[in-house]
Image (cartoon, rainbow over the protein chains, first blue to last red):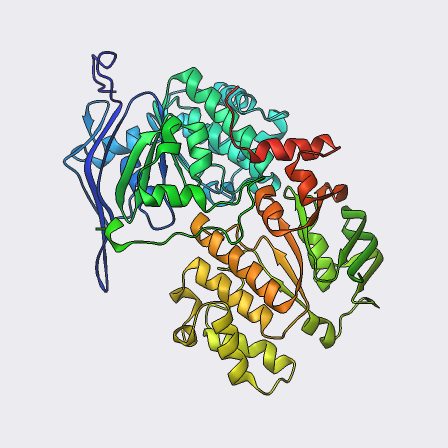
Length: 286
Length: 248
């Protein structure tokens, strides 16, 4: 891998400057992401927004899985000193799943339904590393154990439809972590899961991210969850960053959209009838 | 107060899997009652058993004083309507909103369709402009409003809500929850609402039942839950989980 030799001294693992993603459609050009800039060290960054805010497209552009008809441009999109937009598709592919990994929302759709969980994990590993079958199996089992699957040997041979959502998501995390990525993009990794399972999965993710010193981009619609999990939060609205703040300072959020998002969720012990709703202002999207 | 729904010892079995293991439940008339639990706890199955979508293998269900048998008659469906979780899956993709809303009217042979459709759309805050659109032309929140309109158009007294907002954005969720509260107040409806989100249940319901593995864990009032006056560990776990992620 052609990494940056002095990455210890350089703080930013990922630098994004003026990222734009546009989709040509029959009715004209849709700008899904309109000039997003942030930098990421080995930290947990949350990207929060509602559907259509461009948060997922931002993650996908970094990962390099934007649909082919869309156009991605940026003044700078650097991962560990590598200019992601100028390298060849082959080089990009070598990064994907290896140094940059992505967890998607619903394991029901992101896992291959006709392949056992074990085979999928082994496939990821052997795509990126030269390892023998037996060793790959051993490492996959170990990884399944690391995501707290109690009976890894049994789960290894199961198909995705045979496991619960929480278990599937753990398998997904195992698959993504097995190549030892430096940057993990998690797109709504727990939204399809039960609350209690959500915490288990987050705990696993948190522990592994901390242990391995990864950078994490946590994309979610749930502002409160993100702020409790991440160090920093980027709030997106209509393809733009409306506010960037430390998770601990969320209470002091300035932008009315951020405040509205925080307020509109029902909370145990805070009786508000009716719930405050967001009054969207056109100038937020300007 | 009379009971709108009384359930005693309800059993639902799928092949050899017991989805519900003898559940008792009483929902009073005009009450909003919540069912909380994880996936697989049987909360949705309970709703589906009431409507007849899941086969009851034992126990009794009584709705508005009438014991339900294996089949449900038309009068039952006029009185009990359901709103499903996924607004993307519960509306016919090739039918306009108008056609969707006409379906229940046609089934029940109701004549003043025109007026009812306009009123129903109005009531859920969509207006006439949405009447001839297709589901794919609507946002998630708008679709759920259509689903609510479809449930309300028969003027039921009981609404079964299966995670009605879990597929929606937070701000849209607030709008739909406000709408549901408003129609309940206006029409004096009885709600039986399923959610995995304790905050939503305490916001919407006066009483609730916590379920796990097809069984009732405990029954609480919303204020008991808010005050953390719960007796089961499982409920305590759920409460802790709903407070968000805490780094250990």
